[in-house]
Image (tube, rainbow, N blue to C red; front, side, top):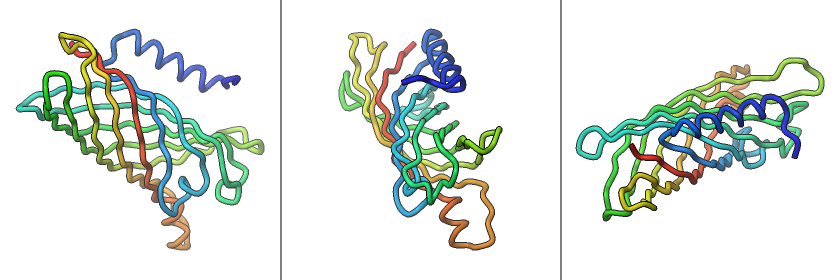
Length: 193
């Protein structure tokens, strides 16, 4: 698989950030659910994520994440001449962690953020970009792979409710193209300081 320049730059940023001991590193899968342009028009998004989390008061904490996913168009009647959609998510969230035992914890999170969906066209020079915001609910299982809990395996789902800033005259078409639900699954490592 040959990567285009923007994807190569994005992957290098992820590798550099990983070398700087980012607290969370993930591989992600996101799939659209329901009757909307993401569910009907794209295949599964695959990509990566990185972020920081911290627990501050009685197992309550905050987190911040960046996620980038790549997909392909599955239905051209939905996306027209656009192809190779890229979904970027920037999230801020609150979390609660419950320690099941010394090795296993469960974490719930709720938050919001900003989304950007970029697509390419063979007929335009610039990319087509849609911005929006997201609200999400999710959970993660955390399993420590070291005795001192400095390296943790993290996996879990998250439901994203995305709203893009798309405006159209027909309310049904606007709803179809401006609201989307995504199921995201992440698997990765958390480095604890």
